Image 1 (tube, rainbow, N blue to C red):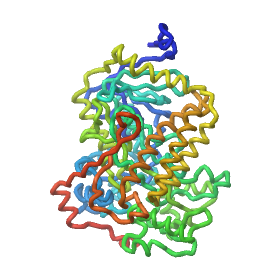
Image 2: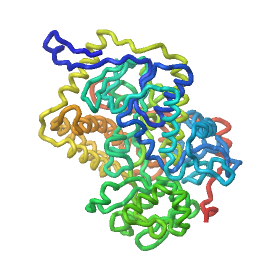
Image 3: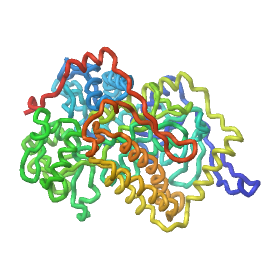
Image 4: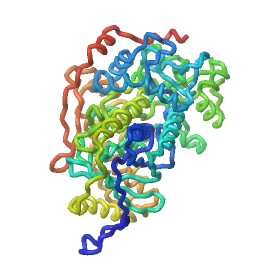
Amino acid sequence: MNHSATTGSDRASVPEYDTVDVSVLVIGAGAAGARTAIELAERGVDDVLVLGKRGHGDAHTTWARGGVNGALGTHDPEDSWAIHAADTLNEGHFLNDPDKVETVTKQMPDRLRELNEWGMDFSRTDDGDIDQRYFGAQSFRRTAFAGDHTGESMLNALVNRAQDLSVPYRENVMITSVLSDGEEAYGAVGFDMDTGEYVVFNAGTVVLAAGGYAAIYNRHTSRDAENNGDGPALAYDAGAELMDMEFVQFHPTGMAVDEDDSEWEPWSGRLVTEAVRGEGGRLYNAEGERFMERYSPDQMELDARDVVARAIAQEVAEGRGTENGGVYLDISHRDASFIRERLPRMYERFQSLGVDMASEPVEVAPTAHYGMGGVAVDDHGETSVDGLFAIGETMAGVHGANRLGGNSLAETVAFGTVAGKHIAERVDGPGRLSDRTVGKIVEPQLRDLASLAEQDGSHDVMDVFVDLQDLLWEHAGILRDEESLQAGLDELDVLRERVADMDVGPVTSDSFEFALNVGFMLRSAEAVLRGALQRTESRGAHYRTDYPNTDPEWQRNIYFKRADVGGMATHTAAVGTPSETVQEALDKGYELDYHQLE
């Protein structure tokens, strides 16, 4: 149904738009969104619509390569969900929500078996069981995988299952705001990226499964047009709180390339999966030293990601890095046939660039990979705004100060299941957009979008986008201190002036999409800088050179919310305590001994 206002000078400026009525709107078509929709469909809720910013099956989930965790015990029958939870809390430096951790770890054996039933192409043992490999900081082999293309295979299985259930889906739609009065969500506003048509979704429940915010940094493992903080920003603007935003995981091994080489430059920062180290890959500095012996003699290359990333940064800072600012990752001691079987995508990628992983090392350096923070939610994934949910990388709580490798894919299907079940029990039809709501909330947002399109400004959108990414890398990167963080906040204020004066193309242009992305990124950027400045300690992925120790008094989560009169307000709250079962696993002190891999 098309709408446009025709009376009154203000109302006449509202562009035409289409209205879609739906009971449950799922924003994001990766693993989290797909699993939510599947759960709803299996429970008889058929009035669901899944929205994707890209084509069907093209989501960031496909870029997750190494594996997905679950205590199946394929190789190590002594493993359990409780030990998985203990490893997750240890890796998160006890800033995780223990209840959310249990929700994930208890579910995952069943979720893996379910994916297997739905046709996921898991790698197998000789006996035909789901194979499992070591991942950093895990006590046992619990990371199930499909070669080194686990996310792609997992999303394929989920999409196929959703199609079998006839889940409605719409692609190439970008959501720009959630319709909310701060207390309740009524739907969302967006536009069709192909046609430029504005769309208002009148929804009874809104689920944000729109990814994270790691791409606010200039070296990152995402594509530039995703993980820009859409999900957290949409929730924040709707009145929900964010949490733990200062914790950004820098994966130790992104591609370190000569950015003046046009063939290699597009690959800068792209993930070299942890599976390379999980299968025995070794790190060497430019002097040929296997330097992890200095930093972590017991766990070596498979220590926690924050430990390995800081070690690489230290080697480079002290002059032992490669010419492209990284170190060497070498798995050439393994047979070529083994590498091609276990790491096919990595082998093919480097082969296409003229590097044979089976006979020579590759250059790697830390790269922004994952935001542990996100939207604060309850045990079902619902925010403080009634009817607004956030799941997957958009939500906070599971990972604490540092994410355990293999837990990101686990979180998507675990909380997709939980949220879907809860929504199915309470769904009661499409939204209730009244004329008053349309006038006060919908139309102003449509006017803002129309004003942004073809805006005549002084600054190129992509220049502002890149400068914002550079600002975060420089001022809130792996090593942080008060002076740099404060300078970053000051520079952010200056950059906002340029954001207000950008030169933007029509609705269907790349510049319009990236202008919106810059707006989303500003929310995450400010929260990262403010949280990192406020947290006067080092914990997990957050490392302050001026406060290098962990402070027990800071075992608290920082929350971020819009202030009543402009700006961003923060407050803190203490973390919960683990259950007795998980505490017993923690007390036993399970830990990987790397040398059993040698």
